[in-house]
Length: 147
Image 1 (cartoon, one colour):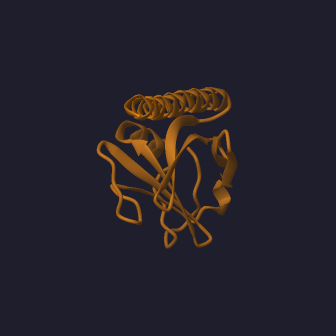
Image 2 (cartoon, rainbow, N blue to C red):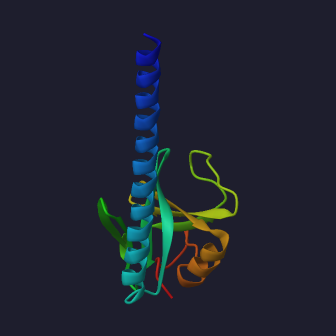
């Protein structure tokens, strides 16, 4: 009986370890794919970086890129874009609309027709984004544009 309990315990530990290893390998592959997407987008973009797309409390790693007319955000499960002429506001903030923040990062917040899109980027990347996609509020004259 003691040997059977030890065997079951060992099998459970091995299964847990395998699950952790598989999860870790998948995370590394996903990171590599995002890096490939950033590199691919960099060729025809003003700026491109890795970012976290915030959807509620969920953080999705994405390749975030700006062209003269569009912002692209994509990963292996998501291909999305926002035309700059459809964006009402551009903000850079310390925390998300739900109050989440991350050390050393800024939130790029875009508002388009009542919907909010939030991306976590590093402070250094935020400075670069601000140069190419300056803040803009709905009550200001003009429109959102890339420089």
